[in-house]
Length: 327
Image 1 (cartoon, one colour):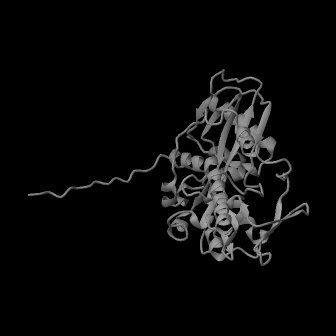
Image 2 (tube, helix red, strand yellow):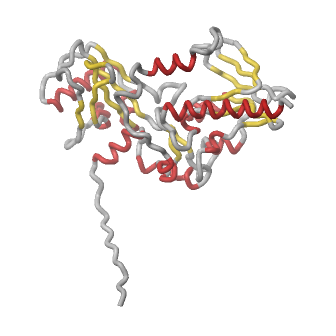
Image 3 (tube, helix red, strand yellow):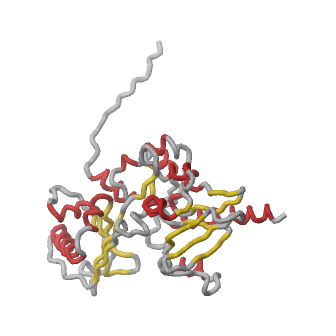
C-alpha cells in the first residue's frame, strides 16, 4: 500500500524587524506593494561595498565624459518642454528654462520615473502615447510603476569617537517612538561612510523619510545625536558635519533610488518585463523618443550599472536605425 505524502504548513508570524529591513533595502513603504514577478527578475551581483568604487562616483563620471568634446554638455539647464511631433522630418525640439532650444533627430530621456509621473503631462507635446502613459500608471485604473524612497543622513566628526575601525550598528526597536521623532524608527543601522573613517551614515526609507524631509535640518541633526546617545548608552560629541537628502521633495527626482512594479502592474501592463517603459516613441518608423534609466531595466533596476546599460541599449537602437536607413 502506498501512502500519500502529507504536508504540514505552519503560518508563523514574521519578526517585526524583517519587513523593515526589506523596506530599507528596497526603499519601499511596504514590501507587499511590489510585484513578486518584478522582484524575482532582479539579478543580484553580490555585495562589494568597500571595493566597487575605490575613488567614488567621480571616477565613473570622469570616465563617461572624458571623450566628449568641451561645450557639448549643458549643466544647470532644466528641460521645460519636449515637442516630439515637430515636422515632417520627425525631429524633436527640446526647450530649456533659460530659453535655449535644441532640434534633434532622436532624444534619449533619462529622467527618473518619479519625475516622469509628476511632470509628463506638462513636459511632452503632444501627450505621450496611451500605452506609455499606462506603463507609468497615468490614466490607468491603478498604480503600475512607482519610485521608492530611501533618504540618507550623514554625521561627521574631526575624529571617530568609536575608534579607528569601521563602525557597524544594527538597531532593533523594543519601544515605540512617538511625535516628531517617530521618523527615527526607520533607521535600522549606522555604518561608516566609504573612505570617510570619521563619518557615519544611515538610510531612512518610505514614510519615515517623508516625515524626516518635512523637519528642519537643525531638528533632524538634534534627533540623530540624541538617538545615537540613547542606543550607545554614552554621550555623543557634537558633529562637525551634517548632511541629509530630501529626494522626495526634489522636483527632478521625486524619490530614490529603486523603482518597482506594483502588484497590480505585475498582473497587467508589466506582466512579463519592464519593456513597456523602454518602448520607443516612433514617427514614420523613426525612434524619436527613447527611454533610459534604472526603471527601464528588467533585471538590474535600482542600480548604477543597470542605468548605464539602458543608456547603451538606447544608443545602439539609434545606431541600428541610422545604419538601416542610410541605404
